Length: 248
Length: 251
Ligand SMILES: Nc1ncnc2c1ncn2[C@@H]1O[C@H](COP(=O)(O)OP(=O)(O)OP(=O)(O)O)[C@@H](O)[C@H]1O
Ligand SMILES: [Mg+2]
Image (cartoon, rainbow over all chains, first blue to last red):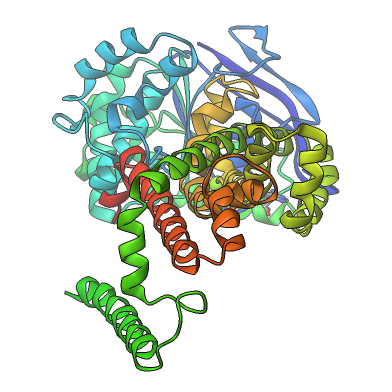
């Protein structure tokens, strides 16, 4: 689905965080948002999901404005936020539980456990899983939502470097089968380069404009070695970030 | 090992105290109507076991009824207080104040309104148990990480679905600790209610034997009350193990 955002505006009390932000995602595109801490990246995702109410602006999915945002987007917060009192299977079927289709969803979830590297952990409680597994479980929960646009808020931010790398490889390999439009928020320049078709760079709050950088390499050709060779992209991103800073 | 020690020490202290008590009663030849010896109390408990059991059943029934009503009321009110801050700000202070009214004063008034049946006893229990349950439940829900609520909302859950999905399960550990306190009070609450006016129950038994200066029976009833209170507490602990199977596996 094509996602279009125009004039998004939000402030916490008198503190303006986002003012008149515009950007859009094409159908099936993987876009990353990079930006310094506190610039309002998480806020953008929360505004999209409707957790926060925007002061102004509109959101369009395939050209149609969406007002009621409940379950419009498949959202994954930074922390896994698995319920400690539910086993993994029940946790990942949260959407089914809310919308009264738990049994169907369970069957679907069971089929996906092996792909997500969680086979055999259906009945385990989250406390018995490693950080990477918990993150994959949270991702499975999000991917079981029917919404065709995924919003991922630093999904691997809490993981160690090695696990994070594995998760990035895994996500890259999953992209085809996920078949979704993805908006990924991250701090990590390499993660953005490695995974996305396009990188949006947000400036310090109150951010109103984004710069964008295309990553043109076809997904099938992307390897760690390819990533290590992308110093010109890195330089370009860094350049944009400092330009956004100066614009203030 | 450490756990075992933790239990042995208080048991030892109680044992020594009982021995001193028994010894003192024998040594100074203290009459029964002043202070019965522990052995005399035990003898009396055995002799009166069927009477004590019958009265205990009544008291336990009132206590359980009171706890159940308290639990339902506390959860309903807790959710209302959580959902509407106006209700919370209006009611919370009132709840705290009601807690300072001595039950022994309130119980006779309840009897005037409600007669000598079960109702005033159960209400006494409710008045004692409601507060710890409501407070622990409300606090437990208040401490839920807002991020969980946001997550569930982004999955399309409406305002009231948040309670069964997130807030109530997250508040269960806190609710259980409040229930434990309440359960321990509940027997005493029922006894106080019976004390003021009843035809059966441990409170009624207590007042009858006290008026007859049968101190061994008074002590026997007190021991039963302590035992039942501990049982109620243990019952909630057990319930906790059943409803929180994940808690033991937490890292
Ligand atoms: N509840 C709140 N009340 C007031 N201000 C807030 C609140 N939450 C966030 N902010 C402010 O909003 C701004 C944007 O926050 P946001 O979480 O969107 O940043 P971010 O870009 O996601 O940062 P990070 O990369 O550290 O996650 C920050 O400056 C923060 O101080
Ligand atoms: Mg953030």
